[in-house]
Length: 177
Image (cartoon, rainbow, N blue to C red; front, side, top):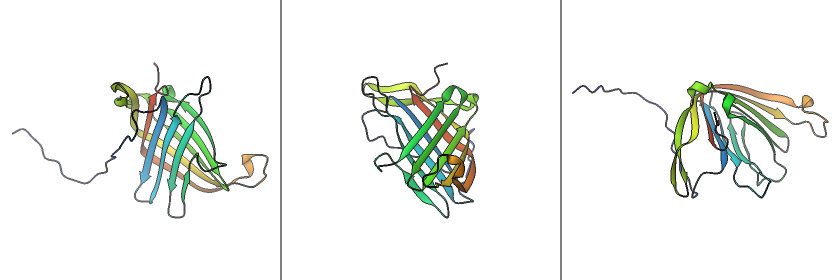
């Protein structure tokens, strides 16, 4: 029959969009290391525009054998700082809440990205986002030193490098080249 059967085990990502469409500008990132029992996931960007103001909102989850922490905008006092450079295949996010700060750096070669259709109010938009599954993601979890004038005094608790992570830039965050 010309067909080849391949058997084995693997991982799958299943997604559900509970809204009418994807946001005007977004990033999705996910990685896990089964052997070391660690994972990180990020979703967010600019969910809406208020006149000239383009606020950002992020959801971040980080898991390791010693830490399970989430950063969310509804937790008052949570601070996010992001840098999105999709044309360079780079994304950086710092999330801080109470006495913890998670620094995330993700990078993938431009040639590893492929287009994906995304939902819009009028239907699916072909190549509305771009995604790579060849991303190197570095996470650094810090204990924040209270009242310190700089981040230099924060104490590094954990550092991880994930290979083969997922990184998606959507809509206005997609590379325009």
